[in-house]
Length: 517
Image (cartoon, rainbow, N blue to C red; front, side, top):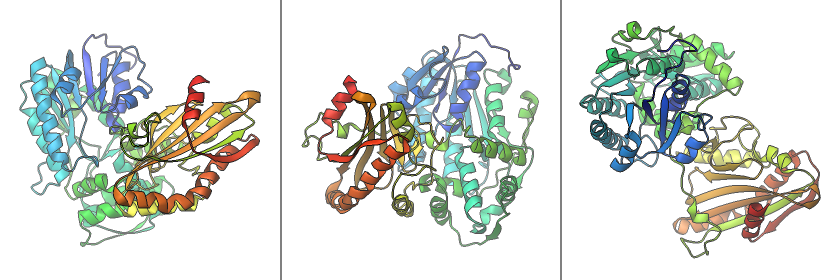
């Protein structure tokens, strides 16, 4: 690993697959600072472009679908090394293990065609257990497929990664923050060896193009093996909370655990279930050879939790578990299409005018959701979030990455930022459970006389009969919820409201005005 301040002058291109994910997003800037040319690849080019490092002189951005051979070939071409940091655990994949298997097989084929020098894969500890969870079994299968390649492969196996914004840490902190008394599954007493995210990153960078790490599998973990119960107690002490009363019982199945986690924490069931299942398997390092090859100070669980809490409190979360994944398409509401093209899209369009600048309006729009709330009838939004969580959706508890900054791909409660143009436009796509697709858009249009118009557009594309019934059932609520929300946005700008909220039938005129302004 390069010494601090030392630059590695290299024309070699290093491919990071999963660059918008939790680990990949933090790995890319470390490689850039070391002087490597980096090709950052992910499912969404839009999201890649929003990262702080996206304009670095040594970066290339590449949209990648590992299930497609040609897409993989394009990403791997002219690369000397590859970081393989992807998985297929998302609601679009009914069988993430099959998707991961295909992606790994494509990676091996393309890597051999291009003669790459090294592939580095981050897998999971506990893979020697005979009663593996589906998640860990899939990780082990991917590692086995990659190790059969004709190019050198380095595999790191880690247990729980502790860091601000990781899914595992979010589960931990929300459980302890919200539940002074917990009836828990027996897995809270299973031993594991958690590791700090900064230690994981140091291992990943330190192994790059180092021949001693070729064709090796390393267990990586912190300096101590502890139980999940002990980790909860550590978090409570570091957060200044009472240590929760924990009562393990044998009747909690992984499925029931995942639903409980989904209801209490912001992590949805499709992620919570494989993580909960994996916690039943002991995840302790069986060897420590990597310590002799890559020297670093390993942070204890207490130190790791303390740092994560501090970064959350100071809004310095570099990456978040909600970052991963491909942004959904939204062509269905293109305003230039006739209503019959692709199905009827219902719209609710309202506008308000303030005596202020677009910057004044943007301050309020950009803070929507999270701790700010939705400016009106927050109890209704919370109720909708609870109902969504009960049905297996994401609910409201995801909150926001930052209280007043937004970037493409950010989660905002049960919405996802599809597009953000500072002081001009914000487009949110619904990720709650719905009988159709929904979007919420804010447009900010400067007017004469120092005034600014804020246009709010809600769109809904129903799916089936229930979708139509749903829209007409909630339409009566729109009159006061949407009017109240836009009124709240206007008042939050801290500028006089010169024209109260009015409802309109068409958005096209506003779109044209925004483009010409």
